Image 1 (cartoon, helix red, strand yellow):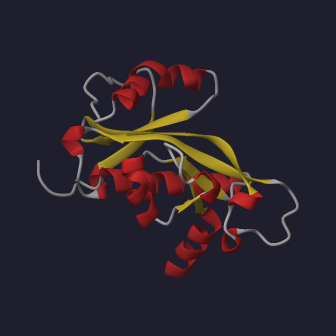
Image 2 (cartoon, one colour):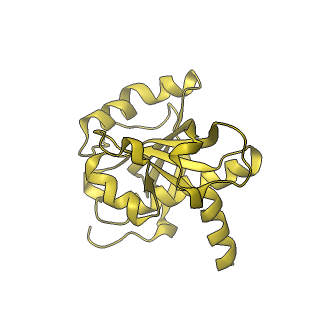
Image 3 (cartoon, one colour):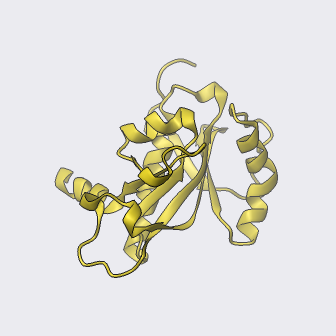
Length: 178
């Protein structure tokens, strides 16, 4: 298959034990192992929640979310909430995300990230959730930067540098577009 897959043909659902994960194969052995061996147990114990993306009957990718916080001083001043009196902001963490090798370069990663941002904005309507965080793999930093994520400067030189997206700004941008 060549070219981008139209987003209208992709579907995201919560991971359940009914899904056959055997054929999923990303470039990351660690992420493959997590999805196939740990994701359902983590869900059972309320550690995180995984979602899988389908194109027709094929799993094209997945992402995993969990609760997080980010230190107020780690956020750039233009991303700060005015008069916020606590040490940490509430956040949602994109803990894992991967695309099956057969579906790379077809827009799946971007679709997954948009779904994560959408879920983050929905969650922020129910509970406080100002930021979306991710500990990026070095090869993914450019992808996240292109989509508005910023480094937490204090930890920029880590093996998996933490980054954040200001959901308040994303929400404002969406409202300006409508």
